[in-house]
Image (cartoon, rainbow, N blue to C red):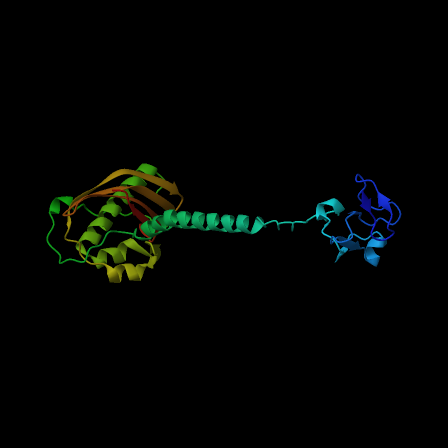
Length: 267
């Protein structure tokens, strides 16, 4: 039998709590034994979830905590914080674009530097040496008219071919007087561009050229202006050198005068 320590009412062993006041029951013991008395607190009598207070009663009987059927409060876990992904995405894109810019710069800059090294005409500063006279050509015949330019492209091609030969020979010989006659007052050429006077002042003989020849010359005639382009092939002490050139001329004072030129080495 079990007994309620509060109202002293006896109950069957299968009952755990007092049916009147809800106090946990204890087993009945002899008067000389020590029993444990459970005193409910005011909060428990009101239906609180706090654990009851225990008082040692005479006798040897004890009450197991498992018999109280005290409800267990649920435990809670802290919700883990979600890591932000977008800063890593932005950083990855920034690194990608940086590498892309470096690759493009590595490809483009050498090409720009290579183009900037191309000058109007190859000039090497070395002492002059005599060249074979078989490459010299007579001066072209000037037109009998001071106002009218030739209209036949074949005639113009022949005239400008002779003028190109004089121009090339003047570059090799360092002949400034010949250039003074060939170049017009507004001449500009080379990379970076230089004026007529700068061209003449910087001209020096080139002793490295052994022989030279023109190839694939073509002329474009437009009234008093003409353009000739082709290739200059030179055999030098450094080996064979080939240059692609385009020269512009104007008919003035009864003759053709150069107003501009562009030269690029192709071999």
